[in-house]
Each structure stands twice: as C-alpha cells, then as structure tokens.
Image 1 (cartoon, rainbow, N blue to C red):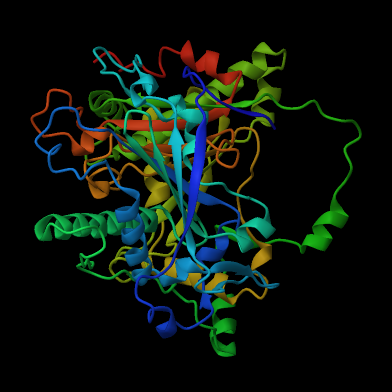
Image 2: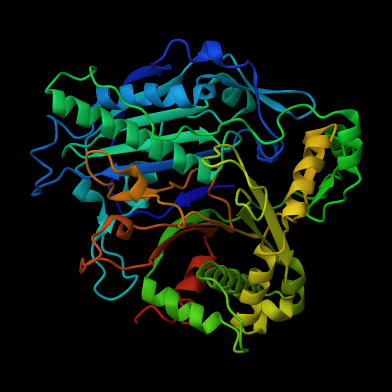
Length: 527
C-alpha cells in the first residue's frame, strides 16, 4: 500500500552528524537490576515492531526575558546527553534489547548495550514550516508536523521495523536536530511494547525535569556543563504488571475466564495452511493520505452539545462526541464513495467494515489500581460494531451514547481477569482481538488528555508536539487526538484557544474530497 503525507513545504535535507550511545550515569544501576527484565501480559498485546514516535519542536526566542538566561545555544547537546544518562538511571532497562520468546512472551536482555542519541542539522529555517490553515476564522499561522522535513520523519532517529531490527537496535532513541535558525527538534522513538502513551509522556516529563535541574545547577554554580547534580522528585515504576511466572493453579483459574474482547486464534502454521489463494490479482488500493485537522475549543463545545442526549441526566464527554462524529462522518464518506463508483447502496453497506476500536487506560483505581508513575503498558482495547442504519442515518447522539457506554463498560474485576487470562495463555502469539481490520475499520487514540506540551519545557516550552505520519502509522482509519500549543500559552493570551484538539487523520485518498465538501463535517467551524 502506498502512503502519502499532505504537505506544502519545500524539501530540506536533514544530515545526521553524530551518534552517541547513552548509558546509565551511575555505573552501579545495572548491577542492581535483575536480568532479563520480563515484560507483562499487557505489553505483549502490541506488535513488537510498532513504536511510539513523537517530535518536539523548540523555537529560538526572539524577544523574551528568557533569552539572556539561555546558555550559548538552545538545548545544547551535551546537557541533553547528560540528562539522558541520568534518565536511564531511573529506566535502566531502556539500555537493553528486546528479546522475543517462542511462546510470545517478551524480555529485555543485553542490559547496558545502550540507548542512542543522534545529532543532526537541517538547512531549513523553522519559519519556512509555518502554515496558515483555515481551521477557523482568524487562525494564527503555526507549525504543522506535515510541513516539516519529510513530514517530520526526518527528525526521528533511523528505525528498522523488521523483527530482526527491533531486537538488535536500541529500544529508545532521541534525535537532536538543529535548524539553520537555531531552533531545535527532538525526535523520540520507543518500542510500544515497552510502554504506552501515558508511560511515554511520563518519560519525556522526567527527561525535562532532569534537564532543567542540570541547567539550574550550572547557572547557580557558574560552572561548565557536567558539574551539576540532578534527581527526580519521584522515581518511576517500570516493572510490568503480572510479569512474574504464574503457578499452575493460578494459570488454570485464569483460563476459566472467557473474555469478550479477545480470542485465541490458530497457530501461524494452521493459519497459513487455511489461506485460500485469490483467484485473480486485486488492483492496489489508493494511497493513504495523512492530514492534521484542528478542531477549536468552541467547535468542540458545540459538537459536544449537539451529541448530548436530550433526556435528563444524559451526558457524553468531548472525546466521545468527537469520536462519534469522526466514526459516523468517515463511514458516510466511504458509503458515498462506493455508491459514486457504481456500487448499490446495499452492496456498499455490506462491503464496508463498521468496527470501531479505542484503547482505554486501565491504570486508575477503578480498574487495575496500578502504582503511581507506572511506566509500562496499561491499555485495554475496547471495540464495537454499530449498524449501517445508525451510522448512515442515525442522529449523532445515538452514536455518541454507544461510545459513552463502550469506554465505561469494564469493571475492575474484568480488567484484572483479562490481564490474568492473557498472562495464562501458553502461546501469546495466538491471542487475537475480536476486531475486523480492513476497509472501514476506525481506530481512535486519545493523546490530548496528556500534558504533551506543559510537561516538556526545556530551555523554552515546545512550539509543537506531534506524531509524524510514518509508514507504520499511516493506516486508513487510524486517528490520533493530539493536544495543541494552547497548553503552554498564558491563560489571558488572546491567541489561546482553550480546549482545541489537533486530529491526525489517515484516510484513503479518495475520501478526502468527499469530507472537504461535507458541510456537516465542520458544521461548527465558523463559531
């Protein structure tokens, strides 16, 4: 499948200049760590070659009291390198390499091999990457990830997505890219099997805290880099839930539970044997195009009000309203496309998959009640399928109510039972989510609730935090809801749009003209 990121920016070359291996700052840290580090059942649900990849962009200040406080350059590499080494004292398993066992369990071995920090240079000036989108009236120009070099991908460290690659290369990487204007981009990539988005943003917060401590100690002592001492106020919890082996009695008890979300599929050998060759070669599907679409806070408030049931006591969250709107709007666009291609409405409805998936964070006390600052994966994917009639012709509030019921369906007991059932499976490779992937499947991840910007202040606050569209993430129907720079704008700023959300939308190319012409898709845009 071909992929494409929609961008108006001119190409600029990013040149990698150095590669630094990052090790723990304290030489005794690894000696105190049991090896290998076992990952838990919730870590084993993610394909091993799927990473979390995020780019942070920091603009060189032009007129601010903080300018004089900056040392020689914005985010000097040496200070970042030291902060990275101190970070590994708290996350020492990130110096190892992923190991996949035959039964599907995963471990981190070869501790001390190191994480990696690349330094790079870009010939572009950051102001060349500004866009003036028409998301709402009077929208200010801003940096958009798709206008950065290679859609932001060039600002990430090199990555080999083969199984051999992810098992032999660092599980955690940083790329420090300096633009011609002195602004900086930091590209972070970590294997998703190590942590989820909650854990990832915690990791970046911790790095930022250590970096700021180093900067403060250098400034107070008026010393050269390297003499300051920094420590986190609270250490993270990086041991995975249920990572220890089960007893046979615990295993048998866990297997008595039958989850509604997961199933055990055939072995890889049996699956291959059951494949029926296609009688004729199918034409390649259209390319998938990624766009960043911003919904303002006012637009989201109006959409939420429109999606709220009229009965007394009925309510939906902004996430549920927006998810329902995206789910329904994209389904209608797919239906319209198929009909325009000569397919009957009934045939189009039967061809398009209507499955919906969203991952739910189950760290909190109402679910798994995991330790504070829990770093590994703690997600459970919830999925449903709505009828053609509801998506094609039903009111938005009914779809939003289905989203509301879906994300609140799990109890603490069920969350624990699912995790134990996964841990008890003799072959984790055969665990399957009860979801039909394919044309029409909608998957939405909510990242906007995290302090994506506020938690990542280094010398200055980030001007952009975004996930680039990569060949791995550019999947038709995969959407991410992202926070915006308003998180770090002053409360009284005239530029602040409280509650705005950037949506990273990846869709089959022919769907975009239909959505662009759909007045209902952005009906509250001009508020």
